[in-house]
Length: 459
Image (tube, rainbow, N blue to C red; front, top):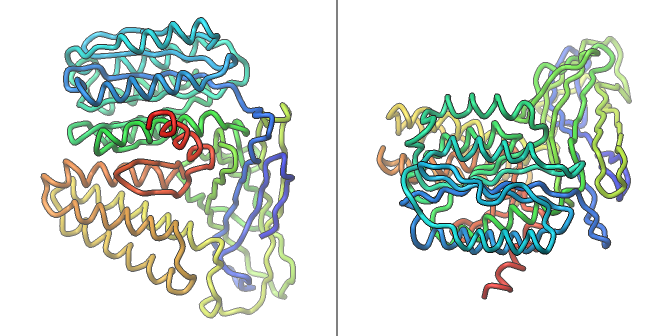
């Protein structure tokens, strides 16, 4: 895999599923990988514009709400004067507890006092709290800030807009004018609407949904998320795939937004990236028939652009994907080990989505069969490539969901939430760190470091 870019900027590389392609008209699977630079010793990063939207309804009373408050107190203490914070609370009423403000020493102390005074209340107007949180984002003034909303809830939307379609439509209407904002949703316990929270996270800039099974999950999940947001070094990452020499890109296998440019290229919007993280996207390419073989046949060009928060300039890196074309029997080739983990990831995500749909229609046996088939496919790839941590975690996601798909009640209370979290994390390659579930895939060094810092200070 040829890598373009330097240690201080975005790095871009590409790969093919096999080392050679046929001279006949043929299809291949390709991959582009975008890697972000490390955090510099100076700590230079993008400023953060953060909104915490907190459910304070009656069901949050006690340990859950106290842990959210404790974790928000820690999060607030980690913000610099260049960062902005707003806190919105909701039950049947919506309160802007902390209007968007820079985290100067005075503003930080005021925010900490406000967090301390959060009290539980009535019902759950989730839509009102979320939409007010988006409105708060719009009032930020810091240039080139990473914008994020963290939504915490343990229940169903039973006030304001109640349907998932209605909430997501309203969210889309306000998000269209709020560029590059991500929404991270955290669902507590077995009563929240995981399908809704997964949709909200997907609608909000390819964010992430996390299923918090126990109160102990709350601090780790939140501070790990914060660690990532406080380490953004690349902003608005976009990768354009342009086919060459009569080739075609019929499909980009991703849930990241994909559009087409004027030249026919496929533009994949990755968004912001944490320090020392990687985003990998598979895509299909169709090669035309050629009469003679070629040692170097250029199939596509990938170009990645992003704003570099360390150098305060645009990174612009391009690489051409080329392969050898012969009268080869592709079936005799060995799958590229650089691509196989991402093929496994797509197998798992697709199976989880199908299994969720079947289980929701009470077809539990069919859902479990889908998951069993996906596990078998991944194990076959593992046997040919060698085991790796990422594939092991995919198998755990599939097995956990399958085990909680035995009855409709168990699926609705646990299995559906496990599947939603696994889909969200693997589709957008977002790290999820919890006490109840050991998953390390996609978690960046900064996420681990922030979690360690929290537990050192709160031992």
